[in-house]
Image (cartoon, rainbow, N blue to C red):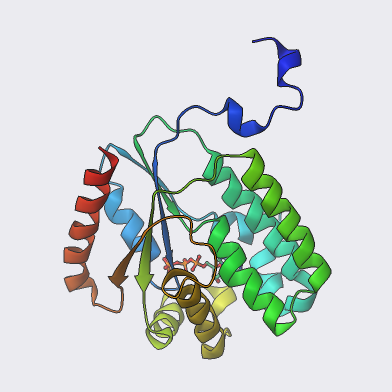
Length: 228
Ligand code: DGT
């Protein structure tokens, strides 16, 4: 291809047809990782776990920890990095017919940035900058999604599971924060208060590990049927 013709071309015109794309959403501790792990066994599925380890080590800086310790100072920096690393997943090419992603640029904006804005951890100017990046990304890249799997938990269950798993940075995150993040997921995925990029499949993720496998099977059936 003539390289001159690439100048100024939106990235999305250079991208090959994308796979059937599923994003897995839900509160912190709702069981997204377990859900993704279940799908690792299928050859047709490319599973992209959330880049939380990158957020804990960005060239030696633990941005997740900084954000929780001093949200006013670090929220913008943290969210900028979240947005970058999640965009990398959205735009990642794959030979697999199905791409399964943990979280998305949509939950980063509608749930986390929104919570920060409402509680004053991030100022309006910073939100505007995030939104300009968001708009540019939507116009320039193919961020389409075919299905959203919502692992719906009560905030209390999500909070208890998070305490139990003992990720150091999250130990002092209060139940109130889980309520805020839960309510924003509900506003987005159940009450349609924000733009929702795909149909939503809701799973009762309060269910115990021993029972939830049946829910995974239903979900698997829907994903594999829809993609063909
Ligand atoms: P799981 O498997 O459902 O327990 O999922 P987690 O809790 O490992 O993953 P997730 O995405 O709910 O959260 C990882 C950590 O990163 C958690 O402390 C919340 C935080 N986090 C994730 N995405 C964002 C974001 O866009 N902004 C903010 N402020 N925090 C985020």
